[in-house]
Image 1: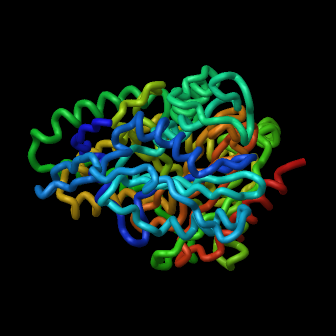
Image 2: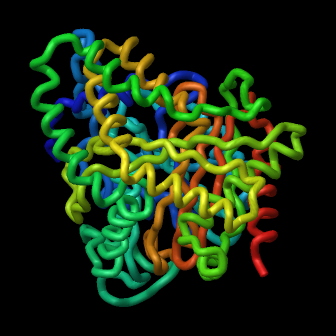
Image 3: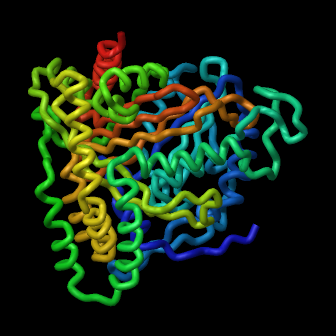
Length: 467
């Protein structure tokens, strides 16, 4: 297959340069199936649905020798699917073993002498299999990579001849995952990201127009550092309160955990009782969990600001083959978590409305885009300046509302974590799938050495809110 190289955008190049030993720019995700999937079946699906459709997955990064100039994706002459879809070696065949595998991999850099992605296939996990995928942020933003990952699935368990389902079903050779139900789910992913997260709807148009104007003008203007400082200055007034016990230096080791799924109907019932949306309830449960956990550590609960990714592109069922990053982040301040749930939700709704009506997303994107065109050390400094306004990254992804299938096996659950940067010690994943909500934490061991206790605090908060 002939693959052409292409130049990275300045934004993709920024994320390529942002790796550091204590926080890698890698998106980590895991899904597990109800019946076994073989390594060869997984490789076939990944080849057809990932590599053959998106040339970037066959390309390695080549950095420019000119300061501030974009890098390029060049075809890897030694590309082989078996270098990227490998056997995952979990110590035990259960969720604890998967968590340990993910925790170990979270701090392992992706080699840049080959395409920057890998999938670890764990053949036996509680009667099924699991796939741990790791993809560098330079390839694409989290929304697009989630869309790519969901494209690995079918929306029913039948093979191309309409025959078997489950573990014995064959992968769909050469078929694009374009079933109407799955396509509708992918569209809901993008639409819900814009509609449920702060700065949706009304800001989507202005941000898109701004991105085009800045992209056209940025390289022609001088004084990039001055312009970036001007764009970033209003962001420095954002709240940056950090719990006292989280002010330790980052380490290299990470711990990844996730809990039992929460029925979506239970979340909706709590929302009806408290006047909140599903998103409101889940987010304020996080605030309550933090308060419980910090109190248990002898620390004082406090409001915390989180950075949340926001998609800037309208949904396109046919993703561009080169993918790329088209997003910004917005800061959302959560209540301290000590308030009653209904009061907490009201506070969150007020702050969300104020954020939606502001130009924060526009400023964030301006700083991100213009800053990405400065020399690497300055770009990193400015990106860190913004990132340090939040204690961590929070993603809330609405996945498929119905069961999907990988290589004929029903997917039983999935979770994905965005990377942290600067001094952020935690990434929180909220992922809805098939009427259930999966919540997971990826924590820095040097700052939050008890990730399992934080997860337990979250489930205690949920249990305390249910009738």
